[in-house]
Length: 391
Image (cartoon, rainbow, N blue to C red):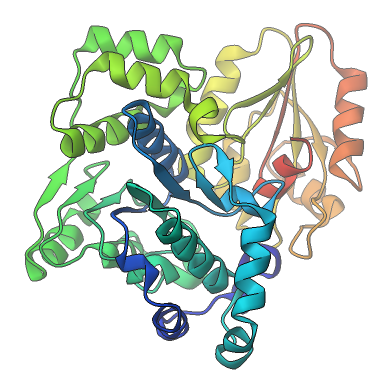
């Protein structure tokens, strides 16, 4: 598993997934799909699009990664996880094939999802890429529409160390004569998308605000995660393109019923009040900036931050974003890739971030709870695996 072990588990080609899908009847060709890539926001956008379609009565498959608590979170129809029996049946039925091809964990999971959505005869499946796009296992799809949310630095060891190189990998999901929607116009990488779209004769759109400012303000005010306005804009524009007629009231319902429709968790996730505890799995600079801005805005008293990262994270890129006035509880998740909390504590001192180190996420959170007053705010983040342990 890439998520647990790092780049040694990452396979950069489509050979295995093509062999696997062909052997099980190419299920990815048996349902309509929307394919989504991007550095940040692709999970949120995927769930928002799914919620919008569900509000309209569509049977929607949803494939995302990684999971927080249960492997089956990755493969859902609406808010319902794939059954344990369906997972077991697939593995048992195709065990010899899996042994022969030796696909990765991610490749097997993608095949299970495609097979399940085909058998369940979904109206449409929203498929999120894992890493990149061009060589991602999901990229055997022939979607109705491709979506790229944005481009920023993350997973540079696999995707490249410049924005243009990263954009080139994401642009790999743009298919011949298939429309693509780009969530954010970024001058530095726009030429990459234009060249790819021109090469494969794909119509390219940049998402636009489709509702009035007044209506957008109402949606943002009602939403618990209003910092995600860019994701809202991208998702609503995609829904508008798919459904042709799409009202602000439809999108308001999609946002309001997001968790109920799709089991959306881990993003600005409120654990409790008095003191308020918020968790969010943002882990790179572009994802963390709006979260930390919102934290400052929402903290009446003192801010307590339970923080843990994976050991291949470039800490200098993220630690300078965190507020010096907060008290820190450095910790690690129960995965092989977790960075030692004492090492994190030492590096954090160079950025004037001070606090204590803890051997587990739970002990760090308990320490924060003991110190926090009623009006304080406790934030848990840095890694999806840290967040997963307290959900």
